[in-house]
Image 1 (tube, rainbow, N blue to C red):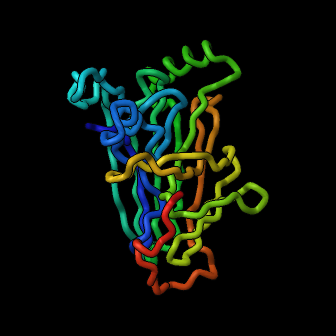
Image 2: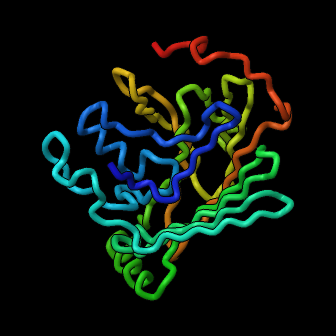
Length: 250
């Protein structure tokens, strides 16, 4: 049941999930089980049409591969630092190197008060052999370049909408908190359908996802983004809505 989720992130504010992964689809059948393991169903960067790890073939009730990964990144690394401004994570993996010569580097900085998360995601050819492989891929793809997307899957209870003329996404939690997602303008921002594979449900719950899309045309591409509480959101909110009081999906 291993997932191709390298460098995926999740974010919860108090007891309210905001950014999630879609979850395990095992209880919804083999197709959802396999889909839930793939990189696009996690909140991380994904080269279009590829996962950061290759999934094994699955046949039969339990799958002949026992839910293992057939190919994984050779290099995965991370370092954490903290200072007076907050906590910083710098991490990377080369899971897209065999197919595209690409390494994903993710840098996250969370403020001490937890109200502001800054991120940078870079997809690039970092070594000589990787650059040679990248050139071969670009020679085949031409002007199309290497398309990729950074996905931020939202919990179904999050009410999200494009804002500021489509340059930002506003998200309202049931606690009353408002969060705003912004980016540096390098990529294309969209709000797309998603699913939440919640165990105990008869079918997957509909949800939404923020997607930043871009293209690598010159060996590397870097996208910057922020996820922050709106300035008028109080530092502390009395979250009195019980989960059983929350509106149920139709």
